[in-house]
Length: 511
Image 1 (tube, one colour):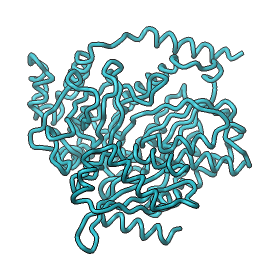
Image 2: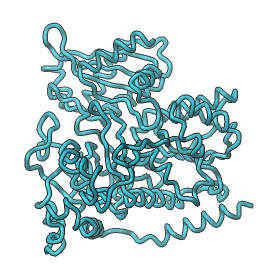
Image 3: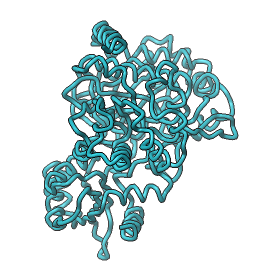
Image 4: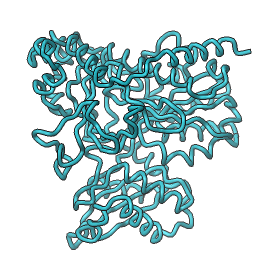
């Protein structure tokens, strides 16, 4: 009998039943902001923006919005975070022990995001809340005694000359796993610290039979590759032949749906799929109940959220922030509207626009989905294609083709006559026998149905659509060639014309 598992499950169920039903979301968020302002009032940023005075005001939230500007990475880094690497008490008390390197899907260099002890505690707290939500699922007690395989970036961090450690956020989190969890955590720090992705996966495959894995967490593209490596190494038909207890997969980092079909093909039976929103800047949301992949916003874990409507109220046609955008708090948002997410965190990020857009699917449950990126939408000729619409189109194309479309990218490209067309590249599981012309027509028709602005553009300035159908592995080899293989590395969904041509040249040589 799984005595320990029964105790753990009972404790989780009790905790979930005792958690108050948070209806006063605005008050809850205002309290998070007050704690942040109080903690950072003596920092250079806090003194400059008069945090002490803001705390004494009648409406600290509104006063804070009036006192501090919206920051994007370059300005935040140039004005504040670079100093934080060498001097204490800049945007948060003390000096950060870590800086997270972004996955680098935007820009030429990785961004450096401060990660403090308080931020790590915030991440752990949100993770525990997601674990507590398992009480809503019908899970056997012995599952709570099984191993949890977390496929992160390399956990081998680098010491910067300024004294802090650097790595991707998943690697930093792996190095700070609490002691009580280390007995459940796989593949263990020794394997997790192997720098080379292929060598790390090889080591995981070699040790796979030693573990009794009940849950897996990681970015779906890389988890999928890991599972295939394990299946091939051990001569299996599916992953349940080696891990019969596997019941949960926790996704994150990219949209999950394009990978559902191919992941299902690796299983012996259905899994519970859950989603998370863990970025370099914090753990923002998690799947908290069955029947949906929408995620509950983490409102009581030390982060204050604001929302900028991703339309003419907040951005111009190229996705650039307006000088005086409309900015909303949690009590002012609406369902179904795209918002650019702005956060203030216990790592010294203040009114920081991280670049993601989110959409509330339920205000009662305070659930969101990630709808795209402020810079990852295609609007060169007014097509206004968001990543959400692209993902939906790929789902339809996958069904039409009868094969999984795991990866894709698109760019607006000019032809010799100077007219714009959309160049798509898709990665498929099995591309044999695909009618490329029919696939192009299906993709074009689906996008016109999903987005009226795209339909208008196709009748006017957008002269055509072209499609390159590639093996999915080409995308991963391209990432590897750019030293972005594994961990949190992701294929950019929207490319520049130059980047798309570079990728297609690589794909032609790599087939």
